Length: 402
Image (tube, rainbow, N blue to C red):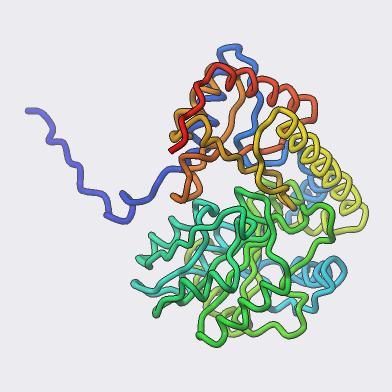
């Protein structure tokens, strides 16, 4: 007698979660590489440099010493103190170590913070486009998303004026990123501070994603936490992945108001217990001066790459509406050729070997008319990629004006 097939239904919230489209492009690109094709990877938001040798050595030494047991849920006390010192030196921000929590990647920090704050039906406001996982976390918690379309006129960022124009009763949290993914743009500190004070009056939180904050160009790195008149409603998310180049170590942190720390601690105890111990010892090491000097050299490389890619795209006749001020992305309007960025990206990959990310990963506002280019490969490859894109587009019909 055949065994009865049993498939209980999945949860509605799980079925509503959208895929990370960049991973689909990455998978297709890897498959083409495995077949012998030469691929220029400009799709994934990951530094191409390996993590620092001193990080490897610090983790190895910790393991040799048997330092592989759980740490406190909030993180190694030494690492939390070291981060507080880093903020004083790097950002001129006075933040006590008791406000830091070390997490398994910044995504875990985001999950903890949102779980601590949101009830079903609460509203979360964010820009469109924005980092895709933010929307998915809001869905997981049965909160409601308020999306605000942004474009080059506001530097692809929320402003206080836009926030006021789109304000609704029930908004409990506003999420911003500076520098932002996918656009690489920043919010000026005076604007961030004004937003924070407005939200304090509304009894709402401001969450600032600063995971690219060390990777800024033509200006010093800044943190909202350096503002001396900051209200007590601001939460910062950061990571060892981008500026520090430790993506696979899965280590991030959040800085929260002291009243939130006990609930974040309780949630962490239940959701992941503690961040990876060897990674925390490696992170301690990359906060030392000699490691920071190496990371600064890498930042300068990314700045040169930005300039090479931006100017190469301009010389090819492509209209780029903003010069990114940070991160390692360009956001490119391809509406002259397509209203389907996913098909455009897939065809470009197959025909030229250049892997880019469709704008549909990042929201709905003109998402099908945009692509994200990551300058996470060397300057020579960036120039070759632009040449290949140029040749590909020469064979496309130009759309008629609407």
